[in-house]
Length: 118
Image 1 (tube, rainbow, N blue to C red):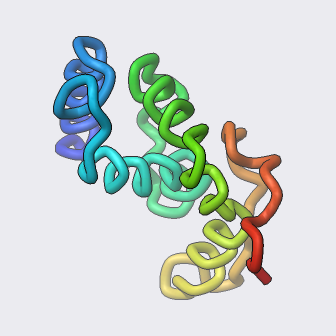
Image 2: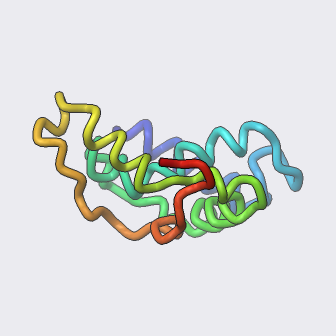
């Protein structure tokens, strides 16, 4: 677990110096990191017990998450209720009862499901 938070600390340092991972232009690697970050606080903190720090506790990572999540075409793909249900109900070896906890706040928690989502 210490390696995970060492990596997050390193990414925080990079994002304190520049807008995106590779500079001032968004790249595919930013979108890949975003997919992990958007799940971190609402799922990983509780489900995988990664509770040393939340993404909300990092200033630069929080800004980065909100900025990328607010981009047209990205925000519409985030279905947080579906993401949470998937993790908490499909990993029965971790969560035998399939209980979906309330979880920490997320800037994407109140978003409507994407168009066409069940």
